[in-house]
Length: 91
Image 1 (cartoon, rainbow, N blue to C red):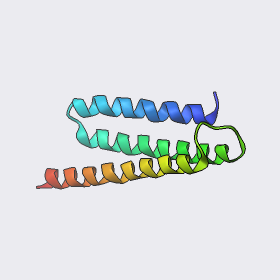
Image 2 (spheres, rainbow, N blue to C red):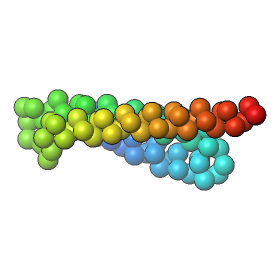
Image 3 (cartoon, rainbow, N blue to C red):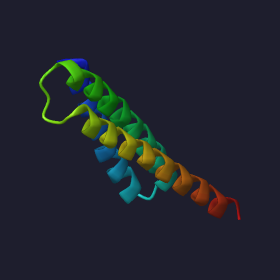
């Protein structure tokens, strides 16, 4: 297995586990897991963009960068959900 395969499996596995954790009522833990999963997905997309510049790829480097920016936006989204949830717990 190469690095891209390991990153893809890690991101997918973390997202799956985070869904189960969220369903069991541990939302704060799930949000951290989603942030880590989307961070992994961001790195995976950036490495694919670099790979696609000189090698055959199903997507162009620009589309890989678009996927990386979407994954980075998901990190920010789950961060703000976590901050909002922390405020609700404190009150």
